[in-house]
Amino acid sequence: MGIVIDINDFLHYGNVKYNLAHADKMLFDRCQAAICATTNLIKGEAIVTDISCKLFTDNPDCKGTVTVLITHVPNQIHWKCPACGSEGIIKNWKNSPLYIQFLKDSNQKSKQIKSITLSSEEFEKLVNLSDGLDECKAMIASAQKTGTSYTISVNTINVFQILEKLIFKIELKTPDRPFYIKLRDELKTAVI
Ligand SMILES: [Zn+2]
Image 1 (tube, rainbow, N blue to C red):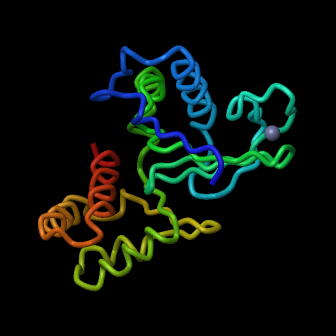
Image 2 (cartoon, rainbow, N blue to C red):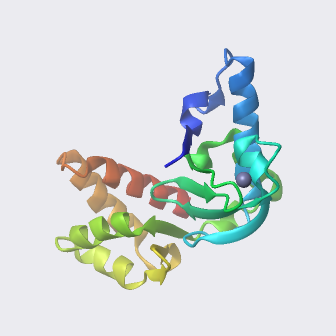
């Protein structure tokens, strides 16, 4: 799993914590720069990029570039440098204030987020969920498999109907509650 960094650890109600130690602030700034460097990459498949390993590891000795796999659910960036073998995960990348600012500045939000990408594991949970929910079957049918991930086009499904059902499931406190909450939040973000 390597270097695991959760963007939420640096935030307080969406803003950068004011009392971050200098080293943490440096780390956070570097992670945000790494997140912004990946914004244009296709989600859901491993992409060989020209993004410097240094941005992810702060190791000036490695001249390698990273391979990146980004998913929305879970909200993670997996990266790996074939040159030095370093790897890691940035969790909750979408909460990065710099990334959010980037979206606002480039006014890309409405154009960009029309689909969500799920890992195989999360997609299986969705398939299980669809057993009891007719509304979810259309969502599953629309999924495109790319590598080990699945991309669902949010334009082709009745998201609001599914949201309602998901909220009901969450209230029932199923064991997969965190999954339903994540899925609900991703769908919400995609349609707003
Ligand atoms: Zn490296």
